[in-house]
Structure formats: C-alpha cells, structure tokens
Image (cartoon, rainbow, N blue to C red; front, side):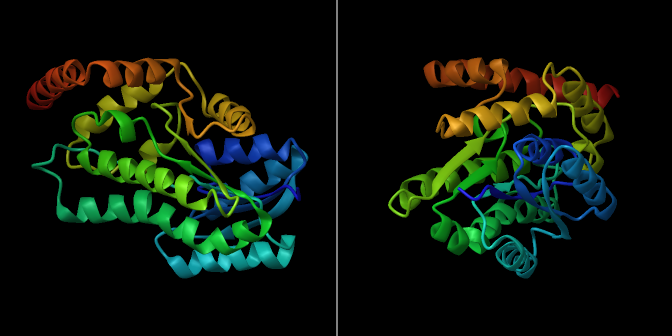
Length: 269
C-alpha cells in the first residue's frame, strides 16, 4: 500500500478534517478545492500533522480539471490509492419555489461532480486496487422537506456508490458511501435557496449537531478500515434509518408534519 489519497472539497469543513485524519497516518495527499485560500491552509495543516503532498484548484463540475488532478497524482505520487469525493454545496427551498437553475446547480456539483471524480480516477484505482469514498448525506436516505434538489442529488450519490460497489468488486476496487447528518460546517456559506428563513432553520439544525466534522472524519477512517460500505456516523441518523426501514409510512407522516410547520414558519417569518 502506497498510502496516496485525493480529496475534493478539501479546503474546509469535512474535507479538511478527512485530510488531517489521513495526514496523521503519514499519507501523501492530493487536495482539491475551488477555494485557494482554504486549500493553502489545509495543505499547511496537513504538513504540520505529518502528511505531505500538493494542492490544486479543481472545480468538480469540470471533468477536464478532475482528469488534470488525476494526472497530477500520477506524476507526483505515481498513482493514487484512495479518492474521497467530498465536494458539495447546500441548497433548500420548497419544490414549487426552486428554479430549474437551482436543480442544475445542485445536480452538477453534488451528483455529477462525484460521477466525474469516479470516472477520472478509475484507471488509477484499477491499477492500485484502491478505494472510492463518496460523501453523500442522510438526505440520501431520509429526504427531508424543503430540499428536494439536495435530496435527489445525494440519493444519486448513494445509488452510484451501490452500483460501483457491485461493478468494481471484480476489479478489486473497494467502495464506501458516507451519510452524515447535519454537522457543524461552513456548508451554509454555499447555501442557495429562495427563502432566507429556510437558511436560518438549516443553520439551527447544524448548530444543534452533537458531532463535529473531526468526529465524522474519525468515524470514516475507522469504518473504512473495517470494510463497511454504508457509513452512518450519527447515532440519530442510524436510528432514523432503522425506523424508516421498519415503518416508512410513519416517517413520511412525520416529515409531512415538519413540512407544514416549516411552511407556517416561513409565512409568519
């Protein structure tokens, strides 16, 4: 094992924490992001933590930037062993208010960005018998109200990961998908939605989270080592998923209640 990892969205939040967790093991890291200042900061912290590597600007919507990243990994590391498709953006708003542009933006980053990352790096991963870690969200499993475009993009990441799990087993490329619940992050900086009250509500959810991005990175590190495919870092998320598996109708009723409250709040706000 050469211990070479590439992470998208590495300039902040969970991407940075994943980078630092692997850096502490002395890995070589290829860090990708659209935010140059955040990227530089992550690289400095990675080196301080015991890792090494490089940072490169990469917009996951642009396939040529991802193939350039793969080429850089090949040139600088001689290949790659793990890729983490983590880059993502937040979004919200009731379906009736969401524009088709909101849909295109969400799917181009959160779903197609992951598809393109897997596609660009697959030749290197086949060579190294490596692994793919895709960061989805509990939204892939639970589909909360007021974020249909985000739910659909993240559910797509889960379906992609399940597809690759079964297709790539013969090629000895391992696949994992992570579904964190909300956690303290700067995801809201990228939040796009028609309703400012919705942004405030999502902000409250993020603040009430008992688990940090660093905790999630630790959980991913351990679960990947254990060979777990579906990684649910939050206890509440695991409980909610178990409940949905047993009594889906009950969950839909609760979500519908929640949607009503959100609408009422938005009107009175």
